[in-house]
Image 1 (cartoon, rainbow, N blue to C red):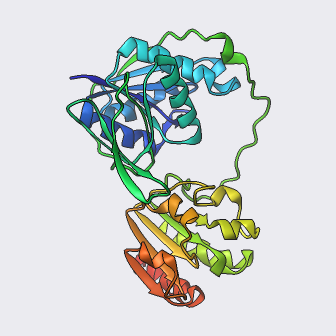
Image 2: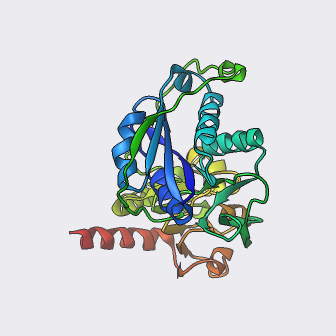
Image 3: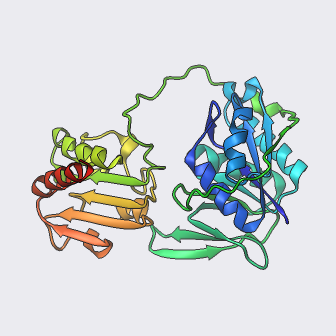
Length: 320
């Protein structure tokens, strides 16, 4: 069976969930071979093997931490040459998409970004995507070279499938451009204790109807009762009520959780483009004619200041 190269997103050996989802998708089209780079790379092997990686290629060098994405592209290209895969899968983060695009250019292949599903086809992998602000769903196939595909988080279940997970050290030669842009400082992001927005299985968002930064406490309380991430519409962010890092939409972050709860959000196309691929959508809005209701699976016409606290209380009561 053909091999599929999977780029591993990890932090000091802790593998992030989107990578495990990629392994599930990779098994549909071949045998997954994982590439883990940087500090803690060898420590990823056990988890990767538990989720289907037949081989784990590892490399560690100061360049991966000290410089921007080019050293990682050099390593991925080296892995590509060593494996000759049927496809290359990369998590659809901002960094992941840049790495994938650079690799596709180097090897002369087509690229598909932000796939939401992946299946095997007679002429190669077939990806599902949302296009034109999520107004259309397309099926796409690369027609030139080895497909390089980035996949959005929450596009597949995490399914354990024990495999050999043989660890192999990858030899990487860095090009002249690898040290062109140096990282001179880092500031750790302040942790809220909530899931990462783009990876969360549940997202609770607030919009213009929240009517003030102080009222986002209501949205946060509901999110915390569900173990969810907190999102915000562009209107709420532009008003200064919530950080831009939490903006969901065409000019913010794109999310695809199992459950998306929109509170006081009208449903403008800009916002819909960032959340329309969510599996189940619930909206709370006092305007029965709000466009968001054209999209939802469940809609509540009511004041969020009445509905959301009751919902939070009920969830906490059921949790005991």
